[in-house]
Amino acid sequence: MVQRATDLEIVIREVTSNVWTFSAPFKLGILPFGIRSTAIRLSNGDVWVLASTPLTEQTKEGIDKLGSVKWIMNSSLAHHFHLGEFKKAYPDAKLIGVNGIGEKKSAEGLVFDGEYGKDLDVETRYGFEDEIKSCYFSGSASKEVAWYHTASKTLIVGDLMVNLPATEQFSKSKTSAKLPFINTLSPSGMLLKRTLWGSGLDKDAMRRDIKTVSEWDFERIILAHGNIIEKDAKKAWENAYSKYRS
Image (tube, rainbow, N blue to C red; front, side):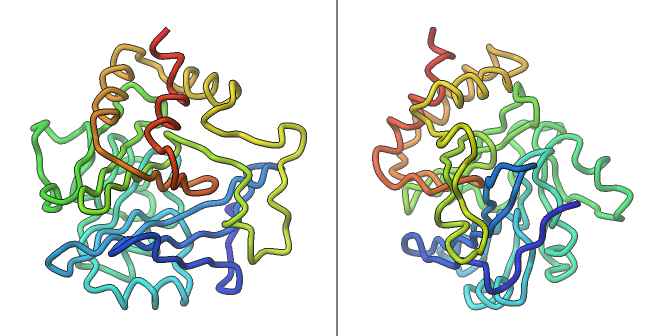
C-alpha cells in the first residue's frame, strides 16, 4: 500500500525563481525516504510538473497558482503511483513517461502522450525542450530520466540521486526522518555509490548518460528522496557516480 501524505504534512517551497517543490513524508519499508514533486513555470507561463506525490488539495492549489499545467512527467518505472490523480485533475496536460510505463499503467486506463526510450525518433520533442533539457538513462534498471532547467541551473531527478535523511520531507510529520542502522544515504557515502552501480544494467550506457548530465551547468539538484542539494551539486553528482569512472 502506498503511504498517503496529508495537507498538514506537505512542505511547499519556492526553491528558486519559477521552481517550486512539494515535499511529503514517505517510507520505503522501515526507511523514511521522503518523496517530492517539482513544478516549473516556463517563460510563457506554462507549467511543467514532475508528479511523484499525492495531489492533495494544498498541492493542487499551489500548482494552480503557477499557471496552466501542460505536462505531467514520470521520472521512472518506480515513480508512478500518483500519475492518475494528476491526469484526472489536468486532463488537457500531456502525460509523458518512460519506456514501459504505459503498459504498467494500462489497467488504470492511463494513456501516455510519450515515453522516453520508446518513441521512434530519439530527437522527439514534447514542447518544453527550449527551457528544460532531458537525458533518458536507458541503462538504468528503472529507466530513469534526468532534466535540466537551464534558467535556474537546476537538475531534477527521481532515483538517480538520494540524499538522506529526508529532514525537509518529514519536517511537518510526526514520523522521524532518522534512518535506522545506516544514519545517512548521501552522494559522498559508499553505500549510495554501490547502490547506483548496482542499478546500472548497461554500464556503458550509464557512463554515456552520466557524462551528458555532468556537462550540464547545474548548481542544485532537486531529487525525489531526501534533502535538495543546494551547494556543490556538481561535486555531489561526480561523487555519487565515481564508481563508473573506475
